[in-house]
Length: 158
Image 1 (tube, one colour):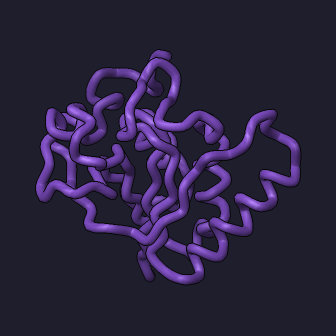
Image 2 (cartoon, one colour):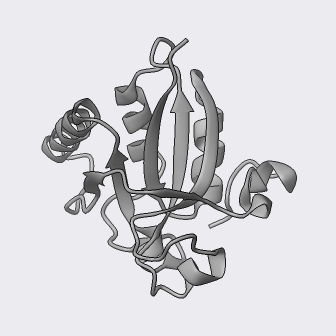
Image 3 (cartoon, helix red, strand yellow):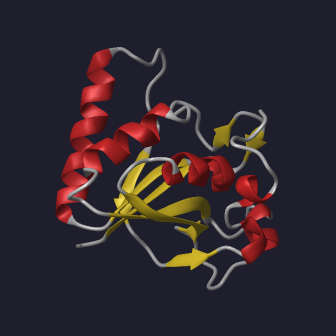
């Protein structure tokens, strides 16, 4: 079994993590921070909107069970990629829509899927999702891991 990583930012990481954990072929989903300038940030640091980090989910998946393209579909289906630095009531650059790719193949797949979505007319406004190389991933504090499951919820209330 070969495990690969995918990293997505789509707003509050609690709900994003829960969705990916329910996806067949996903072996683990870990919430954390990526894309900023502060090393080892805390949740409070990221919420200050001064670190440039996004709340993200690092997905460990078996490509023989689920394709990266399927994970991209899950990503784009479960948030609004047309709102810059915002998802629902959550506002700030930490809630930006971003795909952090781990290989040239992931970059190409993300760009192709983005172009397909733009042509589809599914969204009335332009898609603002960023596609960037995967930076250092900083695991969020333990109390954030599987937060919704720990609290008997399956999704974030928006």
